Length: 219
Image (cartoon, rainbow, N blue to C red):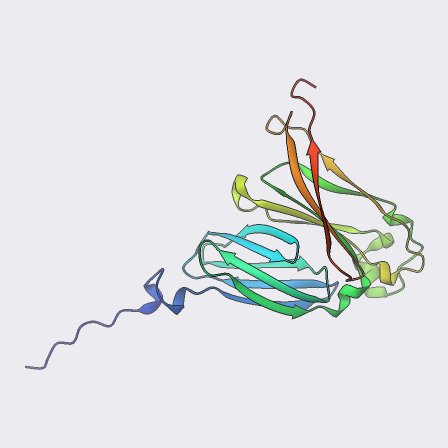
């Protein structure tokens, strides 16, 4: 009789073992000094993912297939992204974003679901955007806000980024920033640590540790 061979196991289905479970990451430079990040982690479905770009850090969550695709504002022309899926070895990817030298960006980061946001005043007083494509993205020469994170529940690392095309306007004006906070039963009478970062025309990324003091719950 012919010898019976043991069945061959399908490596792709051995979750948690081997190279088949290693996250795959790619980054692509997009218009508007944006980066499209694509992550595929087949063994980490609906799992928390930490994403870092210099001093910018936030968390997202993979979908039911282990995939995640999102756009990230580039603070510098050369971007090193670090992607960490749970306790797996972090994966790094680099991409050049030449358009970053035309943008000013300010970011705000905090933990949890606190109702915080960047408030910018003065961004709409620049005379005009001189590049038609950019004018369509920034009507009235105003800046735009983008929220990152928040899909990972109450423990999410959140971020919000304000972008302004200073290199494309004829008379860029001074923009003043503040933190807008909404008082809720969960944050009243608390002091929340936040971190602010900024980059002017893709220059050095600078950061500062701040705190937001919410009024008492009876206010």
